[in-house]
Amino acid sequence: MERNFPYDTEDLWNKDREHVIHPWQALKDQHEEGSLILAESDNIYIYDSDGEKFIDGPGGMWCVNIGYGRDEMADAIADQIRRMPYYSPFGALGTPPAAELGAKIAELAPGDLDKVFFTTGGSTAVDSAIRFVQFYFNMAGKPDKKHIISREDAYHGSTYLSASLCGKPADKSRFDFITDTIHHLPSPNPYRRADGQSIEDFCDEKVADLENKILEIGPDKVGCFIAEPILASGGVVVPPPGYHARTLEVCRKYGVIYISDEVVTGFGRLGHFFASEDVFDLVPDIITCAKGLTSGYLPLGATIISRRLYDDVAGENSKGEYFANGFTYSGHPVSCAAALKNIEIIEREELCAHVRDVGPYMQQRLEELYELPLVGNVRGSHLMGCIECVADKATKAKFDEGVDVGKRVDRHCQARGLILRPLGGLCVFSPPLTINREQIDRMVDIMAESVEATMVDLRSEGLWNG
Ligand SMILES: Cc1ncc(COP(=O)(O)O)c(C=O)c1O
View (tube, protein in one colour):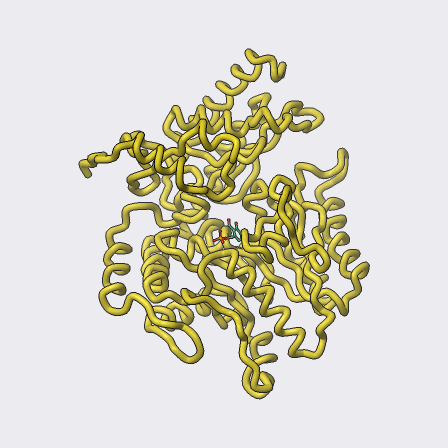
């Protein structure tokens, strides 16, 4: 397709800089560095307002699973807008797309998770899961069961409640959080385990962390454990083998509800619609999802609750109460229509099977980057990946924050036509699921060249002598 770029980049850049506050905006740089204005897109590629083309390493923000430029998504969205752009979802009001999507998600979700509460995104899906747990134990006459266990390196969202569940140290400054009922276990990051510790012993330790925390707080006070199957924004942390099923066993033993936060891992990223059971042998009580649910074409999230838990508070058991939680745009019909078309595309094009094919290839190619002296660790699974740059490979020592090594690698990648997501010393990526082997080769080659270029810079600036 012939593209034109009728954009006045400088004008956009100035307007953006003057008037838009971005999520995770580095306030210091706001008046020095303009934003990259991304204007056009196609499959795994995005173009800036001057027409510069990039491979989209992060898949938008872990979400553009089916890739960009899908006409049938535009048609499905336009069609729904013409039929009914919006109606209230409150009480007993519904729309055809929300009803169809609820049934479809119930069909795809594991175990008896077949009750779907629609939200506006991932944070509100997490909030709604926690609010359901609170409601559930209040209804059960166990109002003390309110404590929540999360983990360091976790990311669960940016509302007051979901942000309080997060465990990324960099996000914790100058904000207030709920601290009396929310607890964080040490990160299950195998790369940072003690020297000489086996992976099996590390797993035992992380499972024991959970059990010990429940016993310390008191099982009659712990409501739920919330965990991403792979900690995404915390740096693509893949817990040790066996960890997921064993932490579920611990939760079962003490009557603690298990919430699996699949906002990133859901809808194909790990080669299945949901990773909990198919990848990690875990059927949780609640799953939260968003992002890949619509491939980012429109905002939508969902909290999927087990029939068993739902039945405990519904029907005769409801005692006439309402689940007084929700949003004007819960189950927005246009977003639901987009999600239905998105799921149809994932199924028709067999994108989950494609990810099971090319995902291991991407991981295998990434392993090559470990040869580079700056790279302390490469990790991931299927189409989630991370390279961790360290100052000292032997001791795993990190660079000082000011060095911003991830940003340096990303800048070199951008100059070569690839965008990554830098997070301190980490670069994470999760390309659209449509990526093929040749495109993976190009992506990894650019990363290798960019890490090498970063090594040259760091040496010449006297910041590193590796
Ligand atoms: C695991 C996880 N949970 C929740 C969220 C929050 O989702 P949202 O930004 O749609 O509110 C994110 C966002 O990155 C996430 O990665």
